[in-house]
Length: 145
Image (cartoon, rainbow, N blue to C red; front, side, top):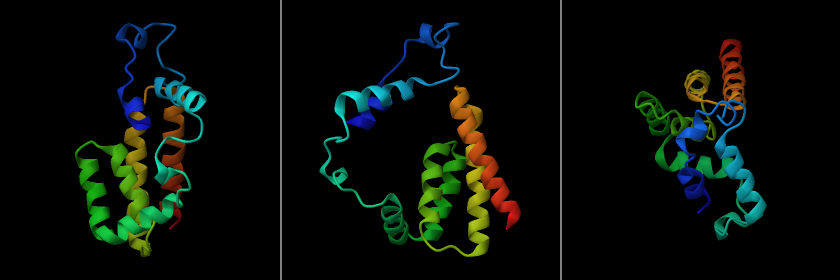
């Protein structure tokens, strides 16, 4: 439900291009997140989220089930298709399992590329800054290796 609302809220076109209402600093999704938290509270209605395991634990189980090579390959394929946001989640899956030095280096470079692409697509200054700062950290990590 929560994800559906976030994905389906549409801001009227005239507001997106208005001099005073266009999302240059923030983002409409930031506002929707805030409203949902205010009116729905901490529980999203899914019992799986009542006492969830750490995301990294779930990621590791999924990556082990699928196989780390397949997860890494899928991340690259999603990037090629221009689906950077979901590709970034596959990189997170890959990082949840043990990687050798070369695999880590490749995943950091891929993450940096994905963050750069997401930064270019982002409309708000906050989003761009978050993506670009994370990209720079990833590039620094891969250069230090």
